[in-house]
Each structure stands twice: as C-alpha cells, then as structure tokens.
Amino acid sequence: MIAIGCDPAGYTLAHRVMEHLEAQGKECIFLGCYDVNHSNYPYFGEAVGVAVSEGKAERGIVICGSGIGISIAANKVPGVRAALCFDVPTAEYARKNLDANVLAAGGRVIGPERFLDVVDAFMNTEASAAKDNVALIDKVEAQFRK
Amino acid sequence: MKLAIGCDNNGYVLKETLKRELLDAGHEVIDVGAHVLEAHTIDEAPVKVAQMVAAGEAERGILIDATGAASAIIANKVRGIRAAQVGDYYSARMTKAHNDANILCLGAGVVGSTVACACVKVWLETEVMGGNHPRRIEMIHQLEEKYAK
Image (cartoon, rainbow over the protein chains, first blue to last red):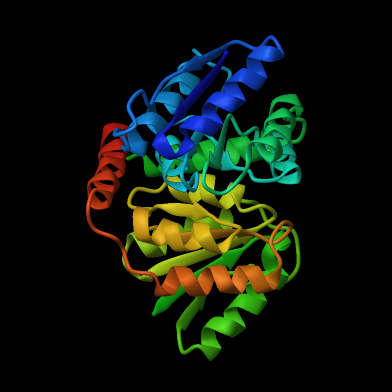
C-alpha cells in the first residue's frame, strides 16, 4: 500500500503518480486534499506520515508546491524519513542509504514524466546500505522528542 | 547574519566554497565541521547546526551532504527546525517566503556550486510572506508538540 497526500499545488501530479502506480498493480490510498481551497500542507504531510509510521502503508508520497513544506511536516512524525527527490540518483540514494519511507516532490518544480522515473527508482530500490544510518536517525529522533 | 554551517565528507568541498562566499558577503559563519575531508556519520553536522539554530546561537543554518536528504530528515527531527532540502532557485526562494525555513540543506552530489551559492543567497535575502503562511508554520509547531514524548 502506498499512501499519497498533497495540497492543491500538488494535486494534478499526485493523481498522475497514482494512475502510474495503479497501472503497475500497486495499491494506493489517497489521503487528500479533496478541496482546491484546502492548502494546509502540514495536515496532509502528517496524514501520510502517520499512515507510514503506523504500518498502514509501506511507503508514502507527498506533493505540495515545492515539496518542502509537506516534507518538513511529514518528517515531524516519528519514524518518518521523508526525502525530497527531483532526480533518480537522489531517489536511489535516499532509499539505499537512508531507507527513506516517504518521497516528496514539488508540483510546481518537476513535470510528471520526469517525476515518474523518480517514483519508479524510489519504489524499486532496496535499502541495502541503510541499517547504520537509520539507527543514527532513530537515536536523534529519540533525543529530541523530549 | 550569524550562520551555522556544517557538512559530512560528501559536502566538504561545497561547504568550503559556500563559507568563503558567505564571509565575503559580510556574514558571521560558525563552521561546525567537517574540518577535514574524512569519513563522518550523517548525523554529526545536522545535530550541531540544528541545536544552534533552535537555541538561537545562530540565526540560520546551512547543511551539505550527498543529496541533502539525510541532513533534512535529521535536522527536522529537532523541535523548532524547518529544514528545506533545496536544489533550485525557485524552491530556495519559496521555502523562505512560505515555510520560513531556518536551515537550508544542499546535496553536493546533485547541485553544482554556482546553483548552490545562488540558492543560499536568495534564501538569505527573501522575506517571509504573510497571509495564510504563518498559520501553516504554526501547524508544524503543533505537530512538534503533538509528537513530543
């Protein structure tokens, strides 16, 4: 299951990504936004982050105008490692070395065809060298949640 | 402006370039390392810079690693930090205007030094926008409170 969330600036790209993933037989759950006037990106970043951290989705994708605001919000949820990826090498690095579980992008920054390659790289790369880095991130998270 | 800057081994060369540019522009720069080109874990510089910014010891922070992703994930785990992973001018400008990002994260493996310098410059010069944006920043603060132990 892949959880997808966006604000209005990411809405078109989010739906293009969903079509793409569903055509590959992957199951997606759309967590909003449902209203073009609902631009509170932290709400949708949190919703996707929680779906991933609670195990309801294996991965998440979050899209706002730049991808930054929604990725900051997602990263505030414990257990979430959200990476903003506009190219295939960044997506591969984030998966391989960080076991990133949320992919972020900006609907005003990247076009759909270019982003779909990034999505495929993010979905198809294993976290083969991430164990030590994830332990470091978990340690930092525990330290600063107090 | 008083800025904290830090990197891992992947970001060392770009960090030195950015530091020189910032000093030439008249900023005060606190360099938390890496000071030599040797292996560093991904958390060292992000934790130091994020703590300094959160405590007000630096007004803003800059982090450089391979892609910017590791630094952004780690810095954002610190309360009060809004760390923006950036690789283009538009995003660098908008993340200050909309998110009031207080740390900029750059990936030396994917962003060249000219673009990186331009991103830092516009992020430092841009003003925070009003309207609905401060309310959304407050929502991020509320997430930090909600998920604190």
